[in-house]
Length: 72
Image (cartoon, rainbow, N blue to C red; front, side):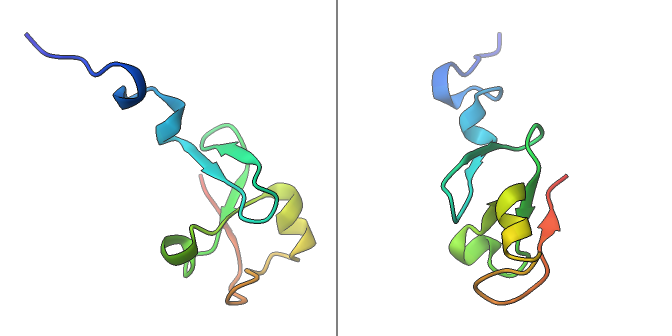
């Protein structure tokens, strides 16, 4: 008999798939929204950006100047 996790610990819970845009604090769900990240600053600053802010930043990270890459 296996034990299933319930509530926020369950695998399908959106808390495991949700990140926030670093500039506008918009809630982004991985897999449904277009999300961009900085490969260098992802771990240090949790640098995720929405599509609108990526256009405003001209595709560059505001912290280090590296090109932003999409999360697939």
